[in-house]
Length: 104
Image (cartoon, rainbow, N blue to C red; front, side, top):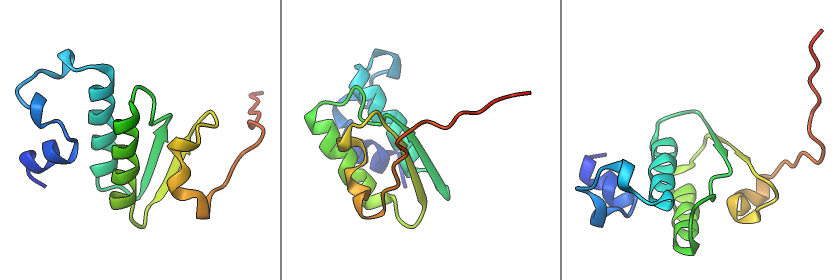
């Protein structure tokens, strides 16, 4: 994927000349999600991926996940925000209580 295609996929064409440190929190979240989702990995781990995204950003995230999650294992850590994981409901595993790890 070319740099131009990545910028288009992230829907950040209007900010292509801007330094990331000047992006809004939602734009920074798009960059982070784009780096993770567009990477060629067998496992994708996302921690509260919809944080800092507005309504359009959440729709973009769902579209990107549908298009690029493919055959890999996707783990979404969320505080019961269905918008973060509803694209995977047919194959959803929910942990009701956190695991307790102890060290001896």
